[in-house]
Image 1 (cartoon, one colour):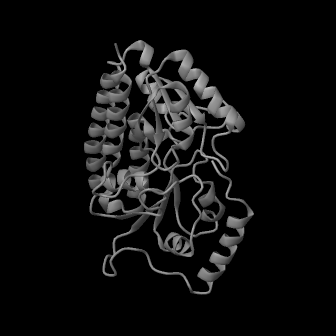
Image 2: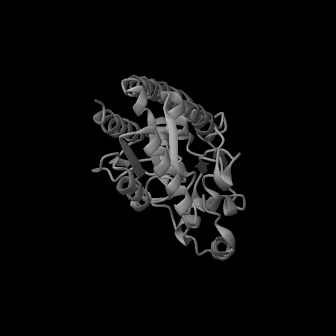
Image 3: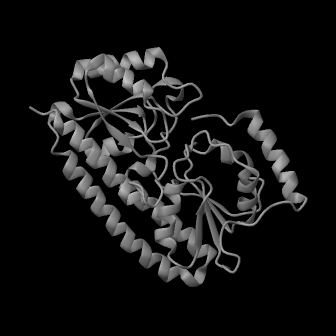
Length: 307
C-alpha cells in the first residue's frame, strides 16, 4: 500500500486550483447522456456498480483495466471527472490512499462500499494490525457492497429504487452461486495442497471462505516489493509444506515469485486477478469472471501436483 506522499498532495492542490479556475474537463460519457454519473476508483467496483445501476446511472472507473490500484497517481482529468460526478464510490479499508487526499475537498457525495464488511487484519510486516483492503475477493463481502450501493443509488435517484433493488437481488443470487462454486471447487484439493502462495497478500478473504492457508511475499503492494528476507521466508515455507504451485497477480511483477520457483522446484501456477479487470476481450472482463478465473487457476495448479 503506497502512501501518495507530498508529491500527490501538491498535485492535488494544483489540480483543484485549475478546477476552480474553470479548467476542469467533462466526464468520459456521451455528451447527450444526462444520466447521473457514478464514479468508482477502480474497474472491479465499476462492474459491480453497473450490475446494480442497470441503465439508470452511468458508471465509470477512474482507473483503466490493468492499472495497479494501490499506488495509482491521479491526473488532472481524474480530478475533473471527480468534480463532475454525482456520486463517488471507493472501496475504503485504506486501499485508495491516493484518492483520499482530495476527495474530501470535492462537493460530491462519497460512499465507502466496504462499510458493512468485517475486516481481516494483516498479520505481518509494517502493515500488521491494519485491515486487509481486498475484501471484494470474497463474493459474500460483495453482497454487502451491493447492499451499500442500493442505498446510495436510491438516495441519488429515488425513482430508480425498485430497479436498483431488483438488479441487486438478481446479482446477489449470482454472487452466492459463485461463492458456492468456489467453496466446492477448492474443497476438492488434497489437504497437503491447501496453501495458497501469492506475491501479494490479497487473498485473505477468499482463503477464509474456502478453508485455505494463505502465504505471500509481501502483505500489500509497497514502494519496494520483495525484500530478500521476504523471498527467503516464502522459499522456506514452500519447501516445508511441499505445496506444488505458487502464483502472482496481474498488476505486479512475477519476478520475485520466479525466484521461489527456481529455488524450490514448485511450478508457477498462473496469473491471478485482484485489483483490476481485463479489457472486454480479456480473461476477466467482469468481477464474476475474475473470481471464476482465479479459482480455476488455483484449483488446476494445486491439484496438478497430487499423487
